[in-house]
Length: 216
Image (tube, rainbow, N blue to C red):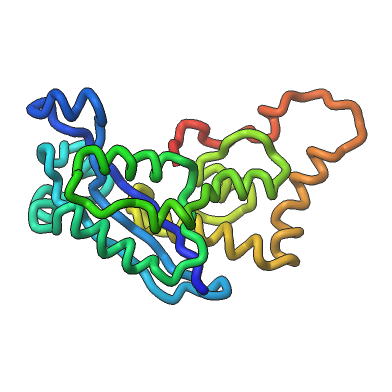
């Protein structure tokens, strides 16, 4: 059985659709996912979604690298979602970083009643942000970038590209499977958290130098 790591990129709904914009705000622009067998990447899924509620704003073109020309030539949301569900059919788990991607899929269901039901994904969906921070012994949410920095892994590829974001999440999973590498990468955290000496700094000190402004 395989394990899937997925990421979504979104864009704002244009003001010309005030009802939809008020209810949902964003629509999915890209699916990116990697499939792993025993920690090894065996397949990828990377599809742009044709926007249904306005063009890609210039800021989001720059952020994601997805131009309006590319988006307009893409398949509609319902088709991409159906293909993604089929692609995940053999997965024992589908993980995303945080709860935001499943929340977006549920909003997309309201925008696209013609799309297939999310039930097959919901049954195997998991929040890898929660799993990873728990494994670190922490009780605060970390962005993907922060999590990589804490265990000294470089971010590979282009940030805010759904496929690369999913690959970097999978890199944290692979690290956790390697006991020796995991112990080495997290030794400094354990020393800080478990130190019996009087604590003379706040928990924020543990994250000094990290960019806390990222959403992922």
